[in-house]
Image (cartoon, helix red, strand yellow):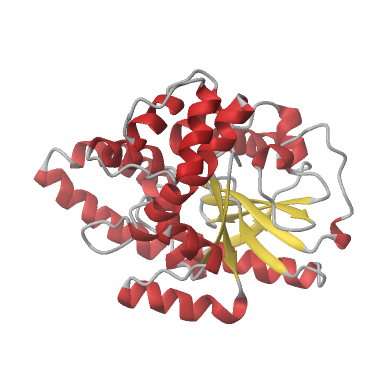
Amino acid sequence: MGVKFLVDLRAELLPMAKQSPELADLDADLRELLAAWFDVGLLELRRITWEAPASLLEKLIAYEAVHKIRSWEDLKNRLDSDRRCFAYFHPNMPQEPLIFVEVALVDGMSDGVLALLDESAPPTDPKSANSAIFYSISNAQRGLAGISFGNFLIKRVVDVLEHEFPNLKAFATLSPIPGFRSWYADAAKAGEGPSLTTSERRALLQAMGLEDDGTADPALVAKALERDNWWTESAVCDALRAPMMRMAARYLMTARRSNGSARDPVAHFHLSNGARMERLNWLGDPSPNGLRQSCGMMINYLYKHSEIDGNHEAYSDGGRIVASSSMRALAKG
């Protein structure tokens, strides 16, 4: 019985295991077996380039889970000279990526994904870049859910890039905030939506062409967000920016699950790996998916070698989130 067969078997088993205690026990046994077989020490890290076999490139297109690859030209752009794509492989599944990360080599910390995905932008000299931006991390095998490779992958890739490009000074992500919009909807229903300053309220009313009839701040913000294409109306968009960024920072830094971990799954992943919450980016992803998930906001998580272990321990042992001063100020606002 092949390893790939068992991985696919567990992928089919997972949804059924939620409904059946017997299958849940089988799933637990299978997960334990696969965790041993897929120990990170047995895996191979490989860079994927445009010269890779077409069958492997097709799998990148199929498995990309963060920013959909729209065409072969889109994929070629993501594998250009100023980009890197790395994946883990198992020796018994040599043409099946387990998890892969896409990296852009740029100047400064990126604040928007559209620029990174712009196929018309000419490639830059990667040797002149000072920042490596991890803009997509995708798990490729559903059957390996719950078996973590991401923390090892990022650290290995940082080591590889540091060796190849000594000029790199910053290693950061440009990450989605997938749980924000649903959390915000619940908060608004509970009357815990954003409070506006006097000037913010005046600006929002003016942008929407409304008189102040005493509508509560959360309801007023909700009315603005219900407008078609609010993000293209510059006055409305500008008026929403400060209160919505405060709410997003509050969500990222205070919303927790019952076990004390961060409610946002991407935040939990990077905080567990020792990253620091660095900067919120307004309309960092104005795609339909980005707007649906987080009103278009994205966040940079910063990986700094000297801080990774301490940040990991602070979060894992006490649930403390390490964040920049700007993030802390937003959350307090």
